[in-house]
Length: 360
Image 1 (cartoon, rainbow, N blue to C red):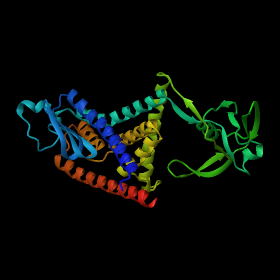
Image 2 (image 1 turned 120 degrees about the vertical axis):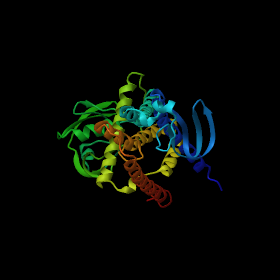
Image 3 (image 1 turned 90 degrees about the horizontal axis):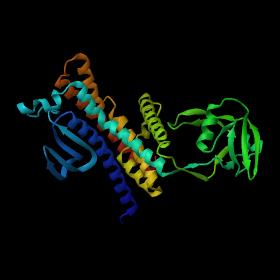
Image 4 (image 1 turned 135 degrees about the horizontal axis):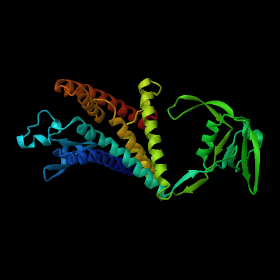
């Protein structure tokens, strides 16, 4: 029988991927048009064209494989036949800075799109874990100090904490011991001196780190937050910056070998997670799409031939040396880049299948 939940997950995943690809290619398209480069085609997806129409000088299409897209520019391929009167509109004849801008704007649009999605989440309202204690572990500092389930931690060493993430942040960056915890229990508020214990834990990359803990867990008590249009701006900017930084650091650690290649996920994982987030609510799905948009931007900026970052690298070389990179070198580099991408995609698909069917 057809599992309709899986079908819905696939639909949400395809919609999310298609939207991100559209935003990415739209960035290339807009700047190309503004730079007076002739756009021959704008396709959402690869392979056989399912729907296509021509408007002006550009063919617009939706193609069969929704795992990418492309904007085809006049003069982008060495095989393009360019009429004399259109030489000035060929991509290959534009200054290096113009070509860099066209290549960069695709990833940039994905970053901007992520910011917009975060902004929407913040102004429409979101939930955060409160500092209400859900559990106290015996033998740990909080238990010995007398903290009980249901207590609310309101301050640590005079610093107000209203969200569980605030509590964790203050704990991680405050090395002073003991710490003064201001706790609210019912109508009473009192202070407790607690010395955190240092234990071995793992960060978001799975690396071993030293963590300061007192032995409490969060409850399922959530606070509703809603930012006004002004206060949402810095929050959305920071969230975009933070997740971009995490993505870059994650890629560096993956290259260094600090993170297992098993962490790499592909389209199947995106489809699965998109479906799950959709079930949790629209805001969860929006947040997830924003994260994937950032990932798409950062990955595309990697200096791998065939990706936007590879094109930017070639144009930077042209800008510095004042000479175009030889077509032979570009062709060889792109074949190598394609090999790297195929290897990464194969690994991602393998990891997705192992996770989905074997839980590994």
